Image (cartoon, rainbow, N blue to C red):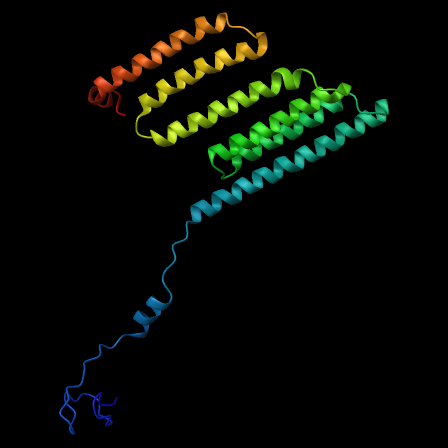
Length: 228
C-alpha cells in the first residue's frame, strides 16, 4: 500500500502516513467467496419447466413417427391395390392436420399464434380436398370463409381475455355477443340471407348486454358470491 498524497510505501495497519501525516483510507477486505459471488451470480433454473418441455417433445416425436408410418402405409395400400391415390387423397391430409393439432396443443406459442397456425392448416386442408376434381368450389365459397370468421372472432376474443383477465363475467358477456355475431355471419355465408340466426343471436346479444350492466351495478356482490 502507498500514501495517496506523497506516494511513500506504507506498512499494513498504520492509520497515518509517517511522512506527510495523511490519513490512510480504510479498505474493507472481501473474502474470495464474496468476490466470486459478485462475479458469478447464482442463476435459478426451473428444472420442472425443462422436464415438461422434454416430455412434450417426446410426445410430439412419438406422434410424428406414428403419423409418418401411417402416411406411408396409406400411400402403399393405394398404390398396390389401385395403382393410384384414391381414398388416400383424403386420408393423408387428415393425418397431417391431426399432427398439426398435436403440435399446437403441445407447443409454447401464444394463443394467437396457435390460432393462426390452425387457420392456415385447416384452410389448406379444405382447399386441398376441394381441388381433387381440378377446381375450387365449396372451399372458397363456404369452407374457408367460415374458418376465417372463426379465426377473426377468436383473435378478438383473445384480445378481450388479455384486456379483462380479472373480470370473468365481462369475458362471458363478450363471448355470448361474439357467438351471436358468428351465427349471423355463418348463415350469411351458407344461405346468403338471415332467418334462424336472428332468432338465435338476438337473445345472446340481449343476455350479453344485460349481463354487462347487471355486473357493472352489482360487481362487488358478484365477486363475493361467485368468488371471482
